[in-house]
Image (tube, rainbow, N blue to C red; front, side, top):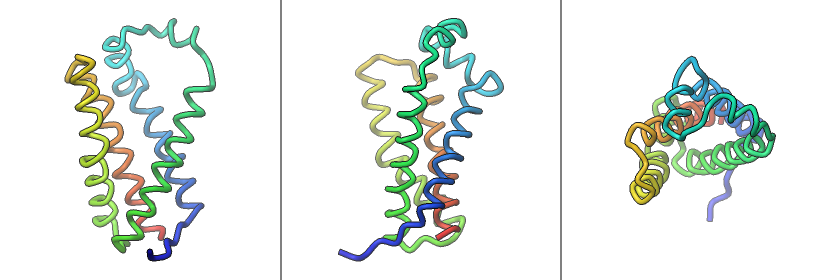
Length: 136
């Protein structure tokens, strides 16, 4: 098995950038209001549930995604913006989009909620792919 070269600073930065994308994505500026309506939550509900646990889990998940994506990028020798985009896209299509589609279908969730949630991960993986490929 080939040795993988991981740039841990790039992984950390990619994870932080993914969290920033998520904060914007689910804010009232972008899709926050629609998302809240689709999941049956209000701003007051979210304030009442003000726990750091979901944010900690989201950050650890972002770190793991960036770490695994860095392995994929290293395995395919991606070192350009286009190759980083491709790694992010194919990772999203093969694992995230399909997993979400299956879960949302069995949960009878709306297509609009699927698109809000799944496309957040597409954007996140594309940006992380760029960061990790270029900063290799």
